[in-house]
Length: 156
Image (cartoon, rainbow, N blue to C red; front, side, top):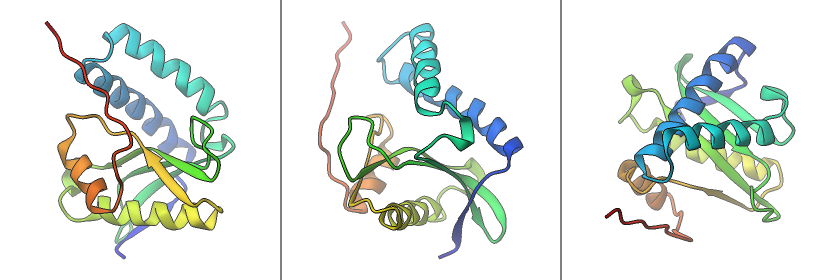
């Protein structure tokens, strides 16, 4: 595999956490789920709950994706499912930086996430993907993930 995982530095984490939160807020708003203000509040609340100690939060594995020694993205893997499903981890975020997309790094990172989950005694991984993110949905389906629920909404 050409992608490797490494623990980020404190400075990298600090920069990532702000970008990750902003990206999450933007995705919530784009999905039509919440107003920007409500999405910001939700993101702040979830960060405080899930990452109380930042990079050192128990059960949260945050990795820098690298290819040929160059940072190309991020992976956030939780060893606990947010709804308490025993033995099931949760991918909160995977992102390949824009200049490196389309090279198979996302696929490799997902396979590394599975290896990491198995190494930590998990038997399954789950994730959420916003409906408008067709590229990600297609990737997950091609890797054997199946849809377990679909939320829908109609504006009028």
